[in-house]
Length: 272
Image (cartoon, rainbow, N blue to C red; front, side):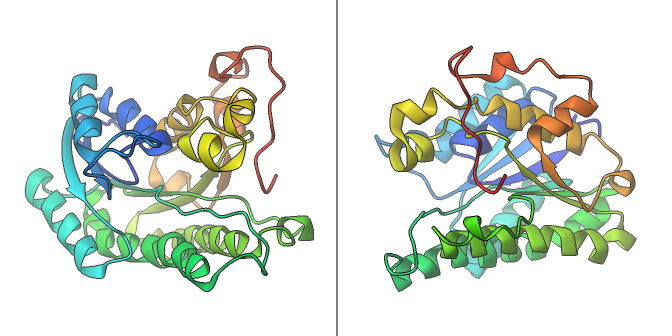
């Protein structure tokens, strides 16, 4: 895909991995839809849809900031319509928005179970469904979902069953869509990092600065997304990619530049 004037709809693009993807594709001339909830900055998380949109335009792309809670069907429909009104269509969808809580069954309150499934599963489904009519018209439509390969080792179910279920559901949808949408010329893939990624979730929820220093930057995901979306949709679909493997196929094997702390031992991400 030549990204010049192509429209990429990214959920959760106000910060972290979503914003990194947005900036990478914006530097190639893409139109970026920053579809996220944040309109006021949270000091612990940083970033809003408006600050992200400004950075995107500074990087060379066009930006549309749309406040969106993907749990709301009406908001999803409205966000997609605003996108089409602004840019004329949608060429790729990045399902990045996600909720996480790494707790066992006893410690997972029903409201947290519902939150993860409403965002990770239902929200991903709603956004994809709403974008589908426009992806059909793209000629090289891509759906890319940030979710892991399906690993049935029970060690990934025992400590955080609710979260695992929600993320595996995302991956199953990604794989299912690859077959369902093949006749429309739409690719559907999933992508997951080999190592933890330095994001607000890692710093605030999972392991603090210590884990962040054992992580890679969001740039590795952004670069992997770039290469996946660059492929013809008919030739690149039905995969649960790992970022390292995507880059290796492009001849990129020296990944030191992505380390938060060069030389540090890296921490392998969940599900791998």
